[in-house]
Length: 378
Image 1: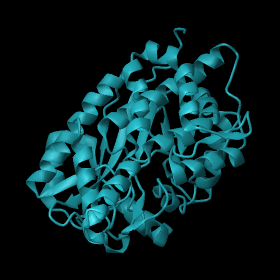
Image 2 (image 1 turned 135 degrees about the horizontal axis):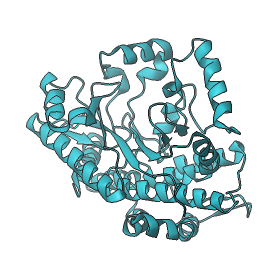
Image 3 (image 1 turned 180 degrees about the horizontal axis):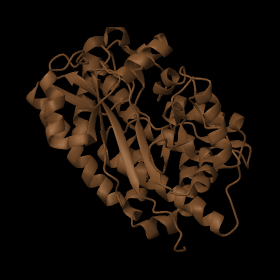
């Protein structure tokens, strides 16, 4: 490449739900000592979330995907151990299979109180978790250019990360129900397109000057220039239940970004498609994950997801080699063969039902699968 190549550092944030190991339901009000013990082990890399039944972790700024794996593993392991001491367990799932949002309590923080007061019922339903991946892109203009092009790949990333098929005890028929909840908030969904960082900032300033938001952290698009760091932040993905899936998707994402940058250096670029078209693939990913394929816009037809993934992996092969993450990127194929968390949850429910378990027991079996998979490989 060249000496001005972005650092392509990586930071991953994951949100977990906390369950009672006896009932398998969400812990409405965890012991006050729980967070303190997590902070003793993880420092500022762990924090509260909107609901008391949630907790968030964030890796350090990682130079490569191997550091991401090590830090995510350490953080998950510590949360699991502290939770176990309290009879609890974290599940890396974007929704809980049966607990109800109306029974949850909000964390007492000014930011969360303000959000709830403004968003009302739309905020109170946010019993959802996601995975956010930051990639270091220091140049403001480059972040906007890559955001415009990367939007095309967002449905592909979502399809591989789905972990929210259940909501309040029911199979929703969607592999990622989470986004139906999150999309009720303003300033969500696919990002807008801008010709420059200055144009992006002018639009943000309109909302700030009108008193609608304090800063750009209140813009919750699927992909955005971070308001806190010199990064491009991808937010569309469900939280991955298995650690290896999270690592593989983070690796694939950073390789796609480097591929797009490499095209730019050769005076080329990925073709941009209208949000109308990309939204169709976004919906298909929410509904089916990878089961029914996505639209290949150039061909004008639905193409099997495996074919599309093979094409992407060829495109980023050079970048995976350059970034030293070939094994991690190729790991996305394991998601296709094993299934996403959503597939595994539905299978656990199906097996429990076939064995004669009651509806309540079937849902608890799903939670047990989530607990086991969240701890897998840490």
